[in-house]
Image 1 (cartoon, rainbow, N blue to C red):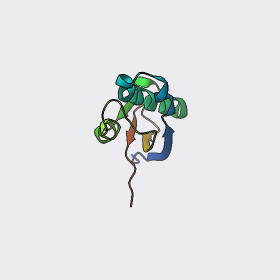
Image 2 (tube, helix red, strand yellow; image 1 turned 90 degrees about the horizontal axis):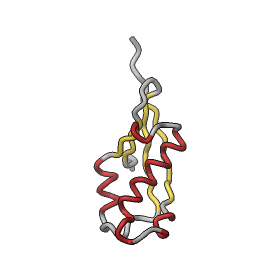
Image 3 (spheres, rainbow, N blue to C red; image 1 turned 180 degrees about the vertical axis):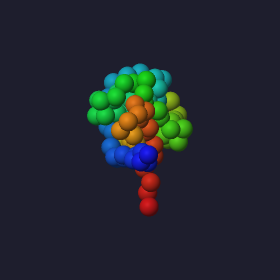
Length: 92
């Protein structure tokens, strides 16, 4: 049986829409925006998108009121499976 190939791509996700929501709801909204962006570009269901703990900590690093304006993330998936992972990029 052949090994499954993991596909990866990097996206820079704009989070400008956070400025239109209340300050105390911006970090949770950022997580939802990331999931919606990945679902739209990977044609995946929202339930099949898994966000890494490090990405969550990056969004919440400055608190609930001041998440970053844009993030660059690596999206990995296997063609046969439905699971899509959102990770921090490898800066080498």
